[in-house]
Image 1: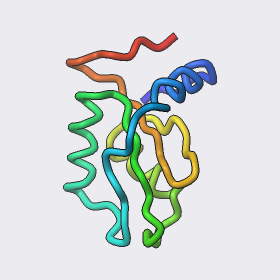
Image 2: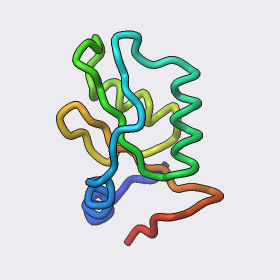
Image 3: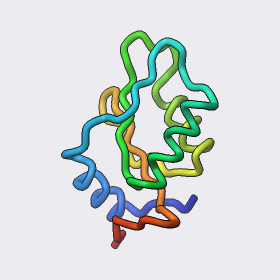
Length: 98
């Protein structure tokens, strides 16, 4: 996973603006099945939002780091209780970074 430039982060934030969160992290936290599903969706979409529910006991920065490391993706940003993740797709590339 390569480091995103500030320009790329800005571009990805604007592209993610209209997206709805696909996954929710609750009090059960993250497990292997959850990571596998996120990885599959990242391969198809490249850019996703994950919502952290209020009953989640873990810190959102820790969750973002854990998901990012496990899926080999980049955390674009964390806004409120929403994590935006990006991973360049191997097969279905849709987003062209500047």
